[in-house]
Length: 212
Image (cartoon, rainbow, N blue to C red; front, side, top):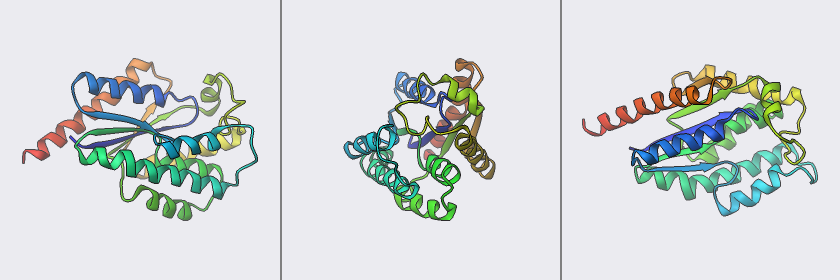
């Protein structure tokens, strides 16, 4: 039942809520599942998360930011994602490599080919079976956040967040078979049902392939 599912989206889209809801649903059905997140999920990742996310610090250059996220990802893939996939579990990750493409590539303006090379190195060939993208208008998403004072990314201007959203939409359009794009303004329960319908289909396909 090995499946790798990632959740992506701009600030305030509700992806973390839906990732937790999916993990709880799988757990209730006795389907072995692991929920993790980026940046973080490991001892090293949690330390780097503090550096990357906190507001009061020296400005981090975009290329340094790229490599810090890559370091988090390498550790997460090595310690958490790959071992659990090898055990046949469903791994749910709140953000993964596509966040780096959207935020550091499209948002920060780093060369997309460079970002791809670093992502490929960091993921070690581990790619999601399904990428769930909760799409929300930039201003709506930011207005959902209680405070932007202590988060470097939430505190960025509207132009940055618009570029991030546009990047996500471009990525989704390039691989429609792997991306599930959902209107994040829909009711929470409706979003959950759309996600579950797709995941259930993947689980059934995976089960059938194991019995062939």
